[in-house]
Amino acid sequence: MRRLLVIVVLLCLIGVDHAALWFSPVHAHSAWRQVRAAPPTRPGPTIEAFVRPEFAARMRRLRSTILDAAARHNHPHLSGMSDREFAVVIATILYNENFGWAEELVPPLRMVTPLYQGAQQQLNLHGWGANFSVWPANLRPSVAAEILSGEVPLADGRVLRIPLQVTGSQIDPTTFSDQRALFAALTAEISNDELAVHYLAANLERGVWRAVMEGQPVSWRTLAAWHNQGIVDPVAIRNNPTARDYVRRAAAYVPLAKALFASSDQTGLRAV
Image 1 (cartoon, rainbow, N blue to C red):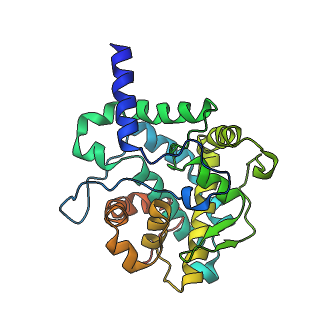
Image 2: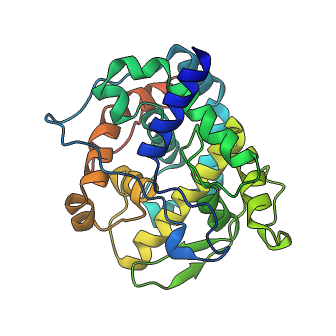
Image 3: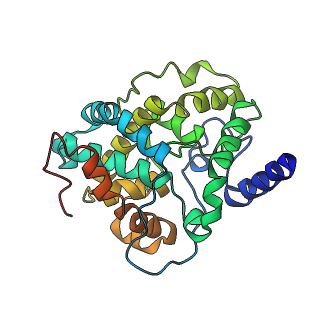
């Protein structure tokens, strides 16, 4: 029975995350984007804000880490956000990433989601060069490598390089000649809750820079779409079914994210 369950999980994994890359060139930026399959069209403005009790406890433990990461990676003069507002964006994305559209559509899948997440992590760790998304931030190793390299891919194909450091990371991508080993090492880091928060915050900093370079407004919606699809243009977000649905789903978690920090700051997330 256990073997059958593993097979089912792996089949679901391959079907949902078929865009993962196995042996792409180390610096092929176009292949490293955070690409995800479009969910089915869902009616309504938002969703049930489901959070597993275990993940809710993890978020409470991560509260100070999120605040620290926000202070390190937010640039208020660029984002127009306070550090606390930036922290709310980080928390919103973390909540959203841990309840996918498939779980909403088929509630029994919630029981096997931890197995699915663990399977993707293990495939990456085994040194085969797998590039599956890894939780809690749902980042691919390839995107983590871009983050550590301070690279911001722009809409016109150019790459902006910014000074970027992920607190706690022990990886220098330039020291790896084997992409499989690099992806396995990155998977180990982005599977760690505290490190994942810092990687996510650094990724959102990249999103701020991308928006600034394109002359686009910065909001939690902008950064959510950047994390999900690597786009920041409001028109592109509206025209992208995956990004549009991701932002719709994320909206359900903004109140929870605010509440996570409400004990010390009641300012909340400004409306955009």
